[in-house]
Picture 1 (cartoon, helix red, strand yellow):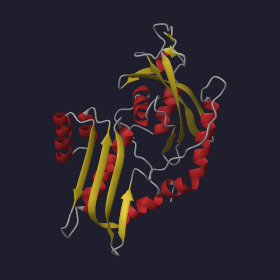
Picture 2 (picture 1 turned 45 degrees about the vertical axis):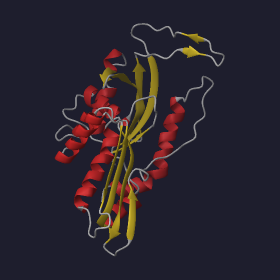
Picture 3 (picture 1 turned 135 degrees about the vertical axis):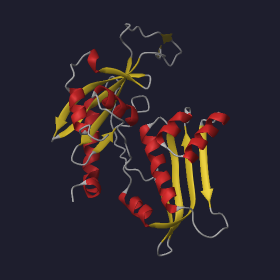
Length: 282
């Protein structure tokens, strides 16, 4: 959270206190969205946020090729739901991945706007504890590799990764018109190490980029050695914390909120001890 703006749960509470009408609807990054459901569970905050597709609405189609336009009023669109669960004691957000719904970055943008937060709310993915330990033990870095996809707006890279080298990279993306980008730095056959502090800082910035924008970070990999000369390969993308629950569609071929809410609660239960060890009070 930005300094002197309160907590994330306070911002969520402020949005949840809005009347359950159009006053909850905001347009963030060109997408209309609203808080659809909101509640508390064991002191935590949970709910459902909906993206309302007002333009480029899909048609109703059959396997036999019949196509019909979906009749919608001027204030209606096609809704895509995404569930969330926030744990205030740990400052951890558990968020449903829905390719058709609202990304985590847009969700916090919505909370920032609707909750009147003065400043940008930042997300950082939770990394497996063993991987963090490896990263912290790295004393020399021989290679550093980053792969990005969906880089349609180089200003996104600039905004999330301040620094002269990244600005040059964003300029190159714009000049080439490239929607994908790969960066590979290596010591090659030379001895020595890349600047370990700079590599770690860049890796964390790129990790946040995937959480705070529509850019997909496909790989952040560092290879090197520990102080004891043990070879290490750290993959920060592969080792992000996530769960894959199985949820059955209902008779309307939808994923009901009750099932998605239970899945998020179970995901927290499965990782609770790990999250407490990482972020619990000392």
